[in-house]
Every structure is written in structure tokens, then in C-alpha cells.
Amino acid sequence: MSQSVKRAARIIDSIAVEPKSVALLAEEFGLHRSTMFRELQALEEVGYARRRRDGTYALGLHLVALAQNSLESIDLREVGSGPLRELHKVVGNTVHLAALMESSIVYVDKVEDASGVRMYSRVGAPVQPHCSGVGKAILASLDQAQRDAVLATTDWKKYTDSTITTRAALEAELSTIAEQGWAKDDGEFEDFVNCVAVPIRSSAGVVGALSVTAIRMVQDLEKLKGRIPLMQRTAAQIARDLG
Image (cartoon, one colour):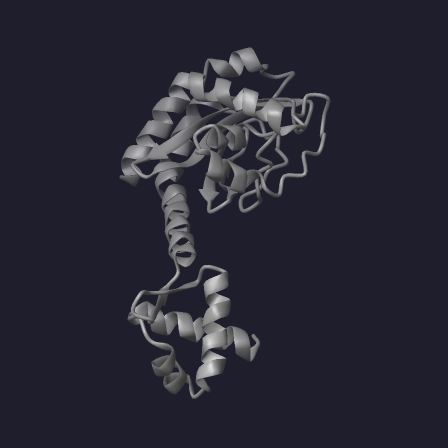
């Protein structure tokens, strides 16, 4: 690890204990005040530090949000593990749990199809928000600014003939999803796979989503829709356990 990264981490640790002035931090780290000021400016630019009215520096709101989202995602996986596996016992299909982490959506848990059919997804991998059930279920529950942030790096790649490739078309579908309370992936990432998904909403808002996925020839979308009430009860249980 480079010295500058180590020093930045130590500065963050220091102001996490209590807000401090440039002079105090410069003395603590044995730096000239102008050097410490530049260090703090860099941390402020990325949201890891913030200058208070009295001139002292404290933890930045972006860093606080990252920490909170990290805790929520860990809690979501731990809390959701049991209900997800109970759901799998009933449906038999592959079930996924995805978490909203800052401006990304990530798979945090997965139970494979009971028949042994394996899906492309893997725990820890990012979700394609424009062509996945869990992605769209989460997006439909976000305000415009949050939605913009999640979609900022979307490449709108056309994976299949059913893939949504424009923001306008996605917005139209998200309106429908918000109204009906569930989302679908109708062969939009892989044309032989379909799924339905529902959001998980805690007291702080949407934190993730869960989905049931199947090979189209085994269970089509209409059959999967029959799982939605059970999925919604599972999502509600996870939300209650999250508090």
C-alpha cells in the first residue's frame, strides 16, 4: 500500500474519533499545514471528509453512506439467508438475493435450482440493472436521483431480442413495476431464462430484491408469476427481520 493511501486512511481514522483542525492534524502527522490542507481537500472532493463551519474536519457524508450501505448489505445476506432457503424448498427454482450498495446492485446470496441446472449469476457479481428482474425491482423503488446514479454506468447492451436498450423504454417499464409491485426478466439477458422479482423494503427504503429464476422450457413466465405472493411474503419477512 502506498504511503499516501496509508496516510489518508489514518487521517480518516483520526477525524472519525473527533473533528480536528488542519493545524491539529498537521501536528499529529508531522506535516506542513499546506500539505495537510491539500490532503483534506482531496478527501473532501471524494466525500470522505467535510469541512465544518468552525473550520474543523469530520467524516464526509459519502463515507458514512458507504459504511451504512455496507452494514445493510451484510445484514441483508445474514437475515435473508434463512427465508431464502425456505422459499427455495417450496419453489425448487434458483432464487437470488440482491442488495443495493451505494449506486450498485450486487448479488449477495443464491440457492441453485433443485434439479442441478446452474445459472450464470454468482454471489458478489454486479447485476445488470436494465435487464434483470432484481435490478428493475430495485430501480422502480428508487427516486430519480438514486435511479440516475445506478444507471450512470449502464452500457445498454443488447443481450437478446428482448433486452431493453433505452432509458425511455426502461422508465416506462419501471412505472408498471412500481404500480404492480413486482418485476420480470423475460429472456432479456439470456433468451432461454426468465424470472420474477420483488423488492425488499426496510424502514430506510428499498435495500434489495429477491427473485425466482427458471429455464423457460421448464417453467415459463406465467407459471413463475404464481410464485409472486409467496415471494412477497418472504420479502416482507426479511424486511421485518432487518428492522
